[in-house]
Amino acid sequence: MTHFPFIGRALAPAALACSLLCLAPAALAQDAVKKELATRIVNLQKAQDMDALIAQLAGSANKVVVNNWLPRLDKLPAAKQKAAADQLDSELKKFNDDNVRTIKAKNDKLSLEVLVPAYAEKFSTEELKQLVAFLESATIKKYYAANPQLANLLAQRLVEATQADVEARIKTFDLRAAQIVGVPTRR
Image 1 (cartoon, one colour):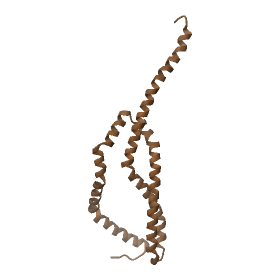
Image 2: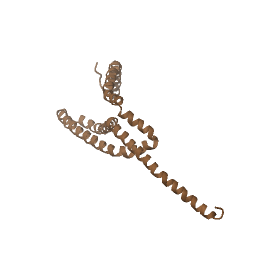
Image 3: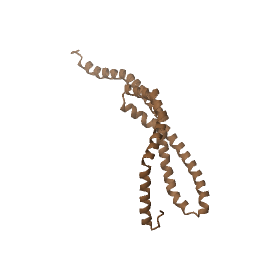
Image 4: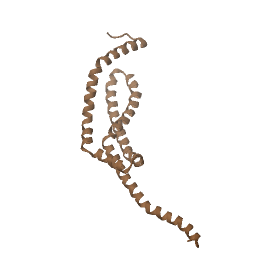
């Protein structure tokens, strides 16, 4: 080789390129596995966790509409308020249903676009496999099935435990509000 140093210098980059090309298919296969696992995780999450988020987002839009129209409803003559309230409730239900559909459709697309690459970047293949196994396990499915009932049980007990305190605070607030507004209080 000492007679042809040019060949050694020319072959070194070619050898490096060849070795990198040999590694590329393995890296691509690994990326494909991670993407497939991350996609499964996102789809499993959509089935469980996203409904609450979607309802919360739609509920926020409902609050904006209600806060805008409730004062206007209060200004209507009493004879028209009930009919208008019923019609507005019907429209609010349609509005909410449309928003839930829209948010759900966008979530189906965006969650894959945003979360799949994020999971693939943040977790190793082995960690992704463990997450899939966890999310597909009977235990987590049982947890998700029982969770609403358990949350309702807690909420019911919490309401019972705090009802007297909250009612006392409502009375105090009503007294102060009546003083501020200048209306007589009911006793």
